Length: 71
Image 1 (cartoon, rainbow, N blue to C red):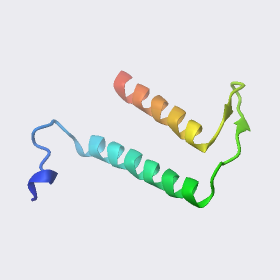
Image 2: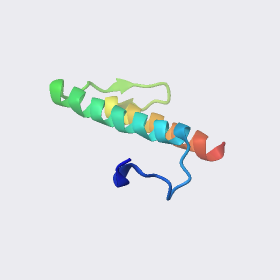
Image 3: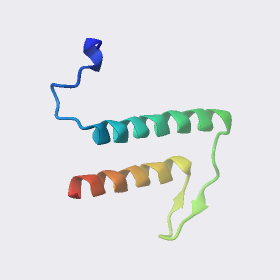
Image 4: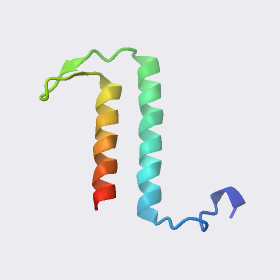
């Protein structure tokens, strides 16, 4: 195993690694999507906020991090 892939210095489980890989993949996908189709037109949400695609992803990531830290 390459030394950069050795995560024994940290108490990572496969679930934690998967969570961070999914976040990284989402950020990469959103970057490509924004590059291919800029803007994403703001929507008026249920909380009265006007949000774009990136805003909604950020709010979702904050909620996910909060639920993981509380769990």
